Image (tube, rainbow, N blue to C red; front, side, top):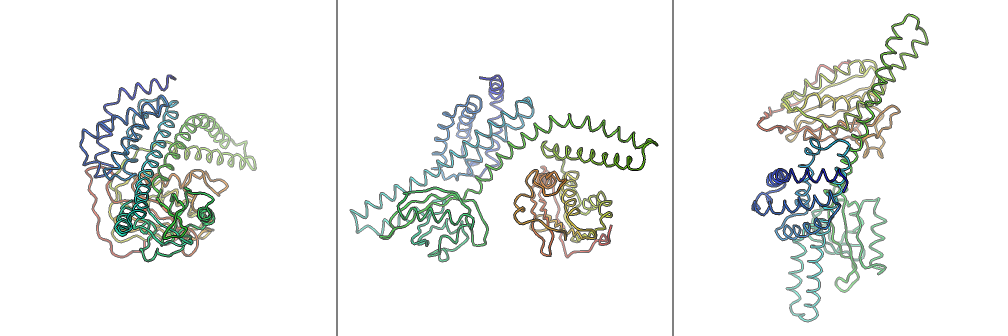
Length: 529
């Protein structure tokens, strides 16, 4: 075993009791009431087994013990009525507990390899539990289907009772269950209806294609036709489903060919995998951030030292009387470009490194004024009209003021660069459903529809000199405050960015008063700055 894994195994063994205790406390308080209600002795036993299994998988690449633990815990939780997400979240707490230990106790050069092993172990666990819960559902349906077939053959007089039991079983499973005949849905359980936002009567005899996102329609319908044509007996696929409101959600279907009321039909189990997709995305983002952090840390020093030397030399040259005319202009341009490179390095470091937040009571109006003061020169240069519309009484929010100013400035800079000379930016804010909502709307050129899904991705930018980290950093900061940020086309053209900020204090023991709001006032900043 490499020394890195020997050392890490020793570290885990040394920290075993502390890890298990923190894991237990979080499990009882953060996951679900069902876990909080379980006996402490049982939780300590399962956590200890999970710790040992994770230890073997991470340090020795031995997943056999983890397979055994997943099998035992899956059966225990499945029979107790736990849902898949609860069990997955319980296991994901291991990473939450481990990250501070990695940060404090592990060399930076080794942390990325360990984190990658840790993420691989968690991804393996999540998929194993998904397959196990899926198998439990399918096994129940298959066993009852076989029982029903025997009953129909040998006890025709009990058909009605058997059918009632069958429907009850289908209704109790948490996944959607449907029967499709001639491409129409002829039966669906309540879970299927809820997933798609329809009532039973609305789902009945609706074409299945109406519930599939257009980009997956051809592929999905071809699979169903192959089943009916008996080209294959079963198929499992992932697609985007459409609900009644037209929203799309990642979904996994397992469909089989069968006979329903004497005719060929497709029976399917439909599972929402939104949460699983998000977990997988977070795992990928964590690996990416770890790599970025390692890369940026190593190059920042190498880049910034020569940049500082070049910047000082340029300042000395500009002070010299011998430099004038075009030579001076070229040197000034060189200085600006060096400053731009330095800002890019700073943005990369800000995005990659973990942020420490200091939450304190903050007035939104004061925060917005600070942002506009910082950007006043840029606003004047482009002759932009900034209009601020704030509700008369906006509650105090608990924020890291410096970080939130950074997030707002990143968004405002995008708007400033997007509008034409003499354009307009409108900032409006008020309380909405327990959140402070801020809309930043510009009348600029807008964003192409196909780019909307990527605007918050790191390094995505259509600007010639953009790093693509401004909005990514803004999202990182807003989400750390328990909020969310959304970008969409403005009604009258341009772009609108909506930032929702939670009013729930982010630190224990801090209260948050929420004065009532009544109407909007027009701020004095309607004039051009």
